[in-house]
Length: 103
Image (cartoon, rainbow, N blue to C red; front, side, top):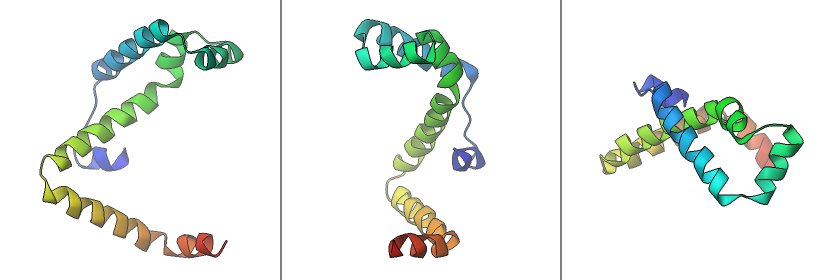
């Protein structure tokens, strides 16, 4: 999400609300027993879950999708971009990666 923001992408509250409304309607139609049990345990309605709990997650996913769509629409540029992000991560986290590999 941070990378998408630094690349100039943003998501409006209206875009997030559209997804939330779609998810609420879908959840009501599907009636997933596990999801309903989760909501009951959390003492939340479907609307509360999506508007309060899932809002930031949805916003982040929309940002990621915009970044992904932009990069993949440029073909080979996406592969180079992906390699750069992975290599940058490896360089910044080299010690931690080696320590995890030992376990």
